[in-house]
Image (cartoon, rainbow, N blue to C red; front, side, top):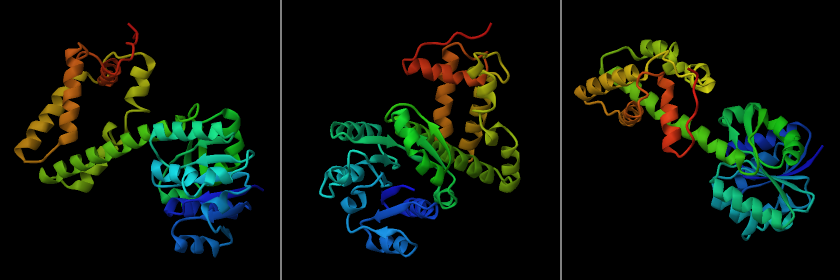
Length: 299
């Protein structure tokens, strides 16, 4: 079993450190909140006297902290965790932070001879309690493989996201989509209620269509990901339907900001001549507007 320093005992970190102890690892924990440390210590982990003490001479050091400045301060500030780690320690940051912060931290640690894996997680604290997080790992493949015993305890699956910083970048893309979808979902349900519909009945309808099932394993997988944008559902028709909904919502004084922004994307796609193609072709418009090369599609 491994020796692990775990720094950051919020709801996620507390659950993850408990899972590591239950799996038989020797875990030293630290948090700036002494009560959080004591709660975990009562379950059998070692209560470190400082962040540096938690990190000193361990096989692994894991941080699960709120943001990038917290991670940098813990490593290189007064806490001096980087100085406490040995050259044999593998550092794993499981926080969700900015990619440039991950890049800067990884380089600074590399200059000190310390290996790093960025491993932010997908899932809520309930997933952490069950050890069923999705681990998004970035770094040298050998280092990610070395971290796998830790990931196997706290997660149900590890996805290798590429070189250092790949995990952090993937997490931000994931969180962008989920948080934007949350706002869109709220717009749709408020729209339904103001329109006089039974919300639960509407939810049942939405859950049975692309609205609830999503695009990634549906229309996108069948069409644009397969280089086929022949119309399964035409982009121009989708744009028309969206604008009908926006007009009706406006008559009810329902604000649909996410939908209004989406309408502009469809308008750009129509202007690009993609109106007769599948509605998944909005991806091609956004790829080109982002400076990516255009794709070749099936005839």
